[in-house]
Structures are given as C-alpha cells and as structure tokens.
Image 1: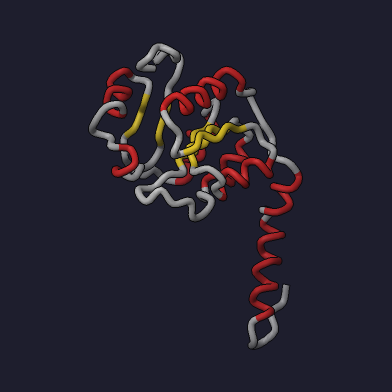
Image 2: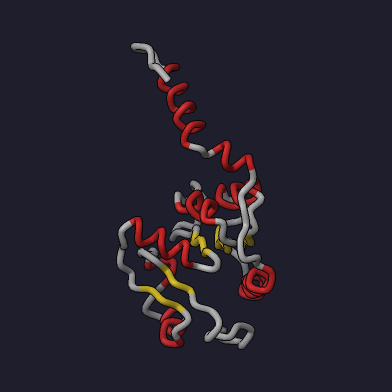
Amino acid sequence: IERGALNPDRVTIRLVGTVQEGCARTGTPPFSSLVEKGCLEYTGVMVPANEAREAMLDADSLLLLDVNSSGAALQVPAKLYDYLRAKRPILALTPANSPAQTSLQKSEAWHRCVPAEALSDEVETCVHQFFSRAPAQTTANVWFHETFSAVTLTNHLADILASIEGPPVTK
C-alpha cells in the first residue's frame, strides 16, 4: 500500500480480537498509518465466538497471523481449523516449516504462506500473488476432514485414556 502496489480503497484488513503488541506495534507506523487510511480495522477488543465466526464467514479471504514475540512455531493456531472449514483462501504469516504451514499444505486448500522471517520484498511478492490469484472459495481435502473430525479426535482420546492403567474406558 505504501509503495502503491495495492490500492487501499480496494483492500480492507479486519483484525478481530487482540494481537500481541510486541508483534504488531499497533500505535506506530505502518500499523497506525494503515488504520488512518481505512484499510486496516482493529479495535483490540475480544469478541464472542459467534461474532468472530460471522466476521470470518463474511470475509473474502482470511489472514492467519501465526507470529509471537519469541518467533517460535510451537503449535497450530486453533483458528486454522475454523479457517479451513470456512472455505476461504488463507494468507498465513507463519515461520517457515511451521506446523501451520504443514497443515495448510497437507489440507490442499488454496493458501499462500509468507515466512514470518521474510524480507519486505518477499512479503510483498507473496501478498501480491495472494490477492491476484486467490479463488472465491477453496475446500480442504479428505485428509483434513478425516484427520480433524470430532469422531476421529474423540476416538484418539479414548485410545489414549484406555492405554492408561485404571478402569476400562468405553468408546
């Protein structure tokens, strides 16, 4: 947007909930200047789950910010599973080879991963590719739906509990 590659009147990024201040520095540019231009909306207020879900389903595409102040890629953010079920293209800012990147690749849903450690030119290229090529909808594959279904996960938990000594666990 600063360089004119994206028109701020055609892009609105709406961050729902809170972000870690150390990662976003919400009070300083470029964050604050994007808010002033009206292409970035952020209140910093937690919203009820149903309101967050509605915002997600109203969006043309979804942004996954998988970054933290330590730069560690520890786990898959829980919202990624909701994002994949929403059938929207996903732009993910995540460390290279992170669990989130691996899950997105295995799901085969349309996405672009921007390495969290990327230089600004690489970030710009990824973002441009995302906005120029993103389809209206995308669907995760059978692997994703089978691996993360409630039935599969419940059976896995039951197996873990059954392996622990004690009274039998029924499925």
